[in-house]
Length: 599
Image (cartoon, rainbow, N blue to C red; front, side):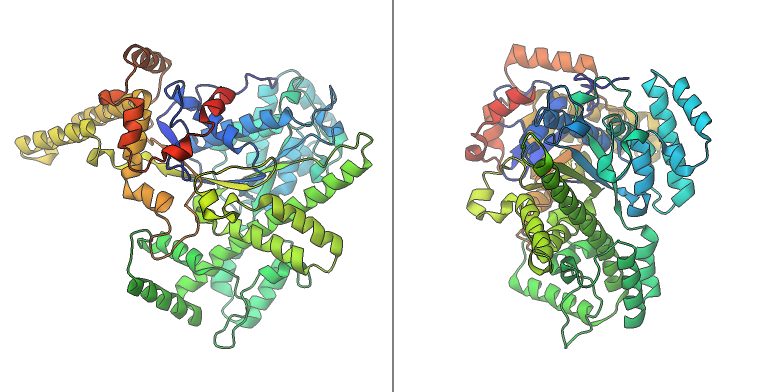
């Protein structure tokens, strides 16, 4: 199956979902002249707004197929847009020094697994495992000649086998990511960025030039090392040996290098900070809240803040189990941050060399980066994003080599988020210049919007169901059939609201404390976070049975065209005025033009 411009499937996002934007406190479709057209293609609006980002973080819940569907569409859209820049006529990607590439760095693979990812993208995974004779490999290729699906399937199965049998340290379920990984594989003609001989790689896709190369990278330290730090390093000597080993293996920076200055917390004579990984109070509160459920977003008095500060200081002084768990979490974040910062610098340096050696005098390739990791490693731009920026700053200031410092500064200026600007500018104008800036996408399940407490039709449905249970007098009489019937009706109401009244749905989602707290009121609680949980929040319905069919789209389009109104009689303008979080000025920018460009 060759790649082509129609490869992005329009039905992949066939479930209820909204993509909300923190800086405008509304959805991507808010304020558009045609907000009801193809709501399942919101991902194209998202790609349009983020196409200039240098570094994009995507915080996920692992192996959730709806999240992976958005990730896959985002990669396809972005790769297609990048392919239209820096073209070199009819030449292939490997001969076009100005054509950008998209680098996808995933938590799911450890740094040690880079070899199997390189081989997977070069269609020679069995060569990595060295389990086939050359003639057998040639026969396999002849058998799969012209059959891209068969070749993809075999390569994926070999990848899964190597992932489990040859390493077995990470434990993620890769099968939900099959389409994402296969698409990345099919864009690759040669993977010279990873140091693999281009003669090993074969290109069977005549239309692969429709997309830029999408290269895969392992981003995590093997998980067993975090457990070692937590359980096997009780004193300074054992920690010193441990971190020296981690540096030698390439998971963390080595002593004497600029980035090493960002690895550990500054030593304090009043506390034992030796070999303590650098973190922040806000990040520690966030990680602890994930374990103990503390509320970090409700407004608090100053006295409450002091209590939390006292607790944090106590954790500083004591080698408590919670502190050890936090250090284990930091090890993962530091290792991934170091991996990302190192790749950014390596590619930037190589692109500059390629640009100078090119006869066409093209500017350096403007590569882009997508980081896929658990949301807890990225939330509020803490954890991994914080480490990336800190490592780049340390390299730009402290590396002994002037050229290395210059490269680090170039990269740092490109990845600094828009929030580095004054808040008055950032809050209402989240814009990214070409190839610059950082953005964060997070995820949340629709049930946390608690529509049964705010949306009248669903409230009525649930009230009637409760009344029926009361009349029957025994909850056991409410058999599964009746429960399924209520769920089906609730799903239908949600689907109708999504298709015919999307901005009214946005209003009810943003009314939920579970969503508005971390997304909009993030700086009001005890942690006083400096950034929202995410710049863009993907809120999705987790009901597997509530699928958006093609006929649903046709009926919704017909209804909105005929009535010119939303569900419940709330027109577009009325829905906006009812939303207490809606920022009219912020949305009166170029969203109509963005919608037209994204179609």
